[in-house]
Image (cartoon, rainbow, N blue to C red; front, side):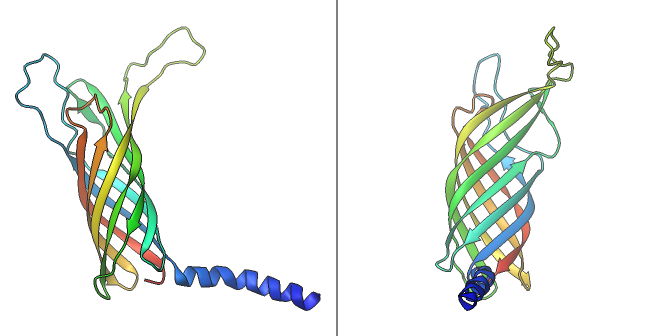
Length: 199
C-alpha cells in the first residue's frame, strides 16, 4: 500500500511537468492605437465623435494545445484621458476572450487567428463630481459598457529563444456604441512576449 501511495504521489508531481512540456502558454504586452470612421456629412447639432487615436497599452494571455487550437484573453485601454467633443474627459477599455487557431509557418514564425466576444467600457470623468446629500459621497466617473464581437490576426516572430515580437490587427463590432460615431473599431499595434512550454 505504501508503494502504491508513493507511485501515486510521484505521478502527481510529474504530471504537471508533462503538461507544461506538451502545451504552450504565451504572455505578451504591447502598445496599439485605435481607428474608426468619422461622419463628415451629418447635419445634426450633436455629432458623436469617432473612437480613434491615442496610445493603448495591452496585455494578453494565450493557451495553445499540441493541435494548434486554444483560447486567449486580452485587455487594451487608453493610457491618457481623451476629450469627448471638446468638453469631457473619457477613457475606453476593450477586453475579450477568443478561440484561437495558431499555425506554425516555420521554426521561427507562426500566426494567431482568433474570434470571440467581450466588452467595451468607457469611463467618463466628472471633474466636479456628482455631489448630493447621499452618504456615498461624490461620484467622479460614470461608465458605459457595451457587448462586442471581436476578430483578430497576428504574425509572431521568435527573435531570441522563446521571446517573440508580434504585429497584430484587431476588429471590434461594439453593439449599440451610441457614444461614438461607428460600431466598427479597429486596433493595430505591436506586442512583445514569451512562450512558456514547447512551441
